[in-house]
Image 1 (cartoon, rainbow, N blue to C red):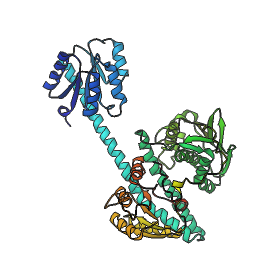
Image 2 (cartoon, helix red, strand yellow):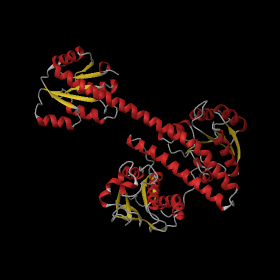
Image 3 (cartoon, rainbow, N blue to C red):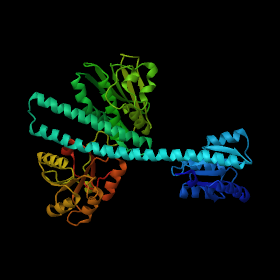
Image 4 (cartoon, rainbow, N blue to C red):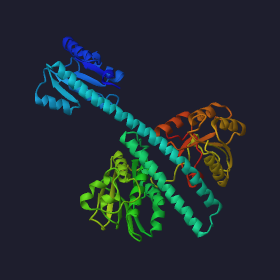
Length: 510
């Protein structure tokens, strides 16, 4: 896009001054629209999204600096460059106030025509570069989402195949069990890397939404320990845990908080020698929940404690050889905890003296249900009969569909398969399965279209619908639930999760 094609909004309540600036810019080959008040300027900015706003400070309804502040605070207009001008506020303090308030430049009037054109051209060049960077950023996010989906697809049949082998031949020779364990371990690592990349992108664009509820700290700890126990056992490390209060709880996203604790425990195990000690404690302190993960591993040089939170920080920041991973885990963990109004800090006495990571979160108030048994499902959320079910698996990737069908059969269900959306509609109408497990990224139609079609058909509208997709964004899940899906799982799904899944209707999180 050339400079001449970019749009300028000229805001001034004085007709003569506004006309003069418009004439100067138009003669320089620029497109200009006008506004005579702050209110009009804000409305036109949202409607037209100009590349630059030439904004007078003294306006009849809203002070120009306030207009600038509102423009920069609104995500829809924050990217628009603002050149403020004034014949009344001409002190250095006025210019500083305007620049600190968000203006991209500030000129005192009267302004020489050549100076005005030169400043506008300079800012338009900057606007062009920023626009190109935003477009690159958008394409990067699209690429990451597609990359994650395409990486997850080949991981699904691998995980399914491991589940099939472990179920059909649990008493295989030791060498085979070790080989399966190695495949499974590195598969889990690959999934974590993909998830971390996407989460970092979402956090940088404020697109990571928390599903907060009252969450037991004990449940978070237990889930994290289950996910990292195998690594500690392989390195023969000793784990000591202290979580004295079973009713300790926080208001937060259980999945995200578990993700943070898994990261801390995984790092503790990775950077602690074979046979080392890892300690985990959870307790209440001054109305806050404190969770600490300590180890007697490689430690951190005191002068580099702050560097570990940087994006893509690796172990060589700590003065040691580079380790596996992208180096974004701690940065991501810190951001997730801060989203919960908490803090994550680290302490170490130095290299080879171990380290301690401390999470602090606001403590949830005591609940009348503490210590009580879980209530039965509400009438509208009753589980579907969990005996043998007839399940239709829908995926255009034949390896995924076939291995998932076999997994369902190993779990005791009767399974059919469809390799397209059209075939799924036909098969579901014919056999009326208890559940349909469907992919979102089908070739002949989207999974959302398939869901709406099944919900709109009298013979299939009450079937339990489970989406299993490589798309993990909140927007993807929202679209699926809006279309009518009952549950949404992100690929690859392990056999234990499939075995424990309760087919509930009416319990959608969105």
